[in-house]
Length: 171
Image (cartoon, rainbow, N blue to C red; front, top):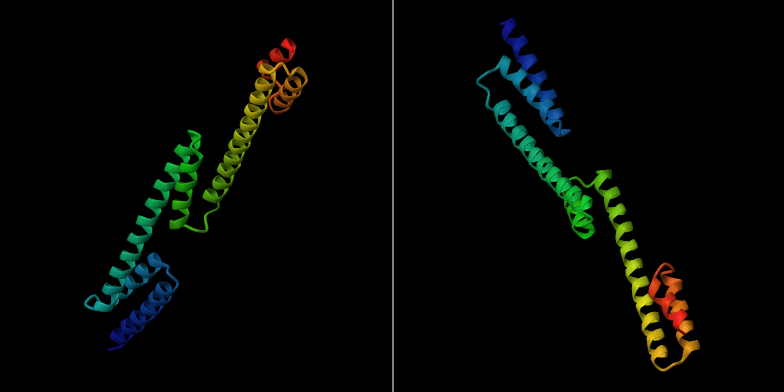
């Protein structure tokens, strides 16, 4: 009778610890305690059903981790290829699986910096093209001062370009 009571107390203690681990989302710890409880009362259904629930939670976590890792890999591939928008989308997808992770956030910041550089370069190109077109129009009208001013403006956007320099020399 003493052994039965001792087993009952150990079973209850193991269940209590298992339930505490379960509440704390410590699935592996809970499984360990529930298995320990089953060592004292192998026919009990409660610890078995709790182990099943813990395993389902572990499977969800494993699935989320796999999806997170796949999204990170996709982001890294896009990042290495300079596909900044695709990389941002993949890193955001990774954050949907693990929102607190710093790596995808820092990669998104790097991508956004690259996208800003590209936007600035496009803006510079647009302004350069407009100044060259203005210079060409003035050149065609033999407005040499207007052409020189416009070509110098183009050079202020892209100082290494030979075309505006050669056009200034022709004025």
